[in-house]
Image (cartoon, rainbow, N blue to C red):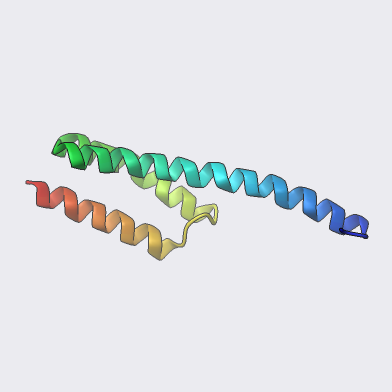
Length: 87
């Protein structure tokens, strides 16, 4: 248990920040899942549109520190390659 006032405050702030990061990560995953479902359905146009809407959300995750930039770039690149291969 924290004994200093600043340490208690830090515990509170960490908890709040964790909740925010969980929500952001969940949002990114939801957008990725939409792209995955469109690819699985075989609908190239829907997959392209889903990726177009997911891309800014993924990069926002990078900006907010939820994802590493290389991880985001890799995911976007692989999804893009899978969509191109559908043709």
